[in-house]
Amino acid sequence: MSLQVSVIMLGVKDVDRAKSFYVDALGCKVEQDYPGFVRCSLGDGSSELALYEWDEVAGDAGVDPEGSGFRGTSFHFITGSREEVDDVLQTAETAGATIVKAAAAAEWGGYSGHFSDPDGHLWKVATAA
Image 1 (tube, rainbow, N blue to C red):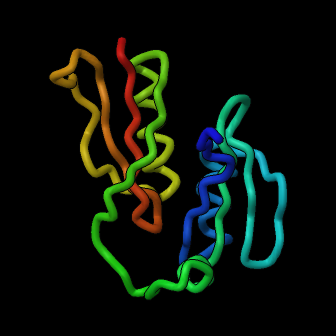
Image 2 (image 1 turned 30 degrees about the vertical axis):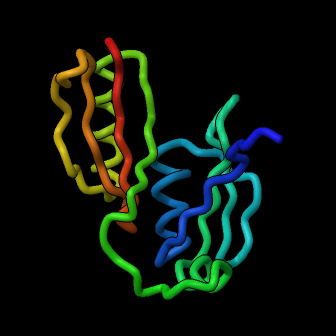
């Protein structure tokens, strides 16, 4: 067996707000849309993204929904240029994200920045260029 990620599910406080952020602002394509649940395509070759009510995700896993703080996870979007990094960060911020770390040259030679979505999920946007 080989491990693969088919769907990334994010627990969110407001599914409609999250749907607007990921679909309307960041261009994800809706594959399924039910009350309290949305599944989106992230593009060819990528896993899908599911948005589900925070308490339901926690309940499904049998954990306390009140957990907070950094969970040791971030999502990474690798782009082809510094301009695209800046564009993605600006688009995300305009849509309600918080810029956690402004884009800057990285010590490994690339360029990157971080934002958190409206529910606090951390994203890194980077390019090796």
